[in-house]
Image (cartoon, rainbow over all chains, first blue to last red; front, side, top):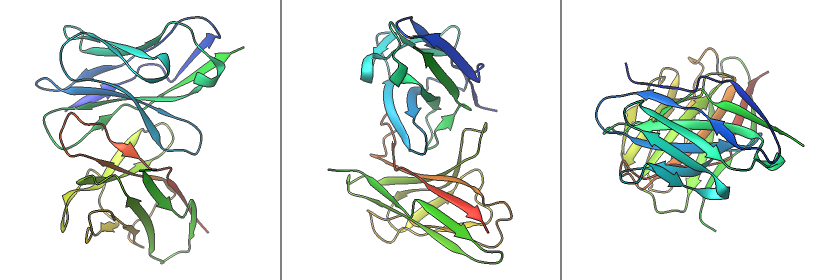
Length: 112
Length: 113
């Protein structure tokens, strides 16, 4: 079965430190990869996507993601975390079908 | 501003009652989606539509129904057959191509009285 794994339910980081939120996937073919962020009682906001090309993708709010085909991973990164980055982050994968497969989400907590 | 509007923000259902959640978009997107979000389970696809007057079941369609009579509107009805309807419901839309991101509304939280 096709799936997306976010192995950490929560990631804690101090403000100003780099952050990484992990995502691995198991799908056939060459899927499209996405990261979304969700603030409390709000919908998901699109952060960035990988379609093809450079393995390091830059997105909104200073976030970037590194695609690794051999490890089937797409980790979200930011060089310097802000308290306002605290939210729920979802990795999503779209194989060449009409459905998007979401991970279960990782809660990022940035401490002052 | 273009976007997706979901209403109401909060909704309460009595036993045996059907309720309808509204989703309207002015992004001129062809495809629209309904997801259910439960704590710790991520998003699960209920129904989706890639074109007006056509829609397909997602992974958890039982107890739900939809219509797509207009490009900008995709209402979801939670029927009395859905025994555990308490959840956060999210509507999304996209251009339809597989490499395009989905854009989400701010959700409707449905609870049982």
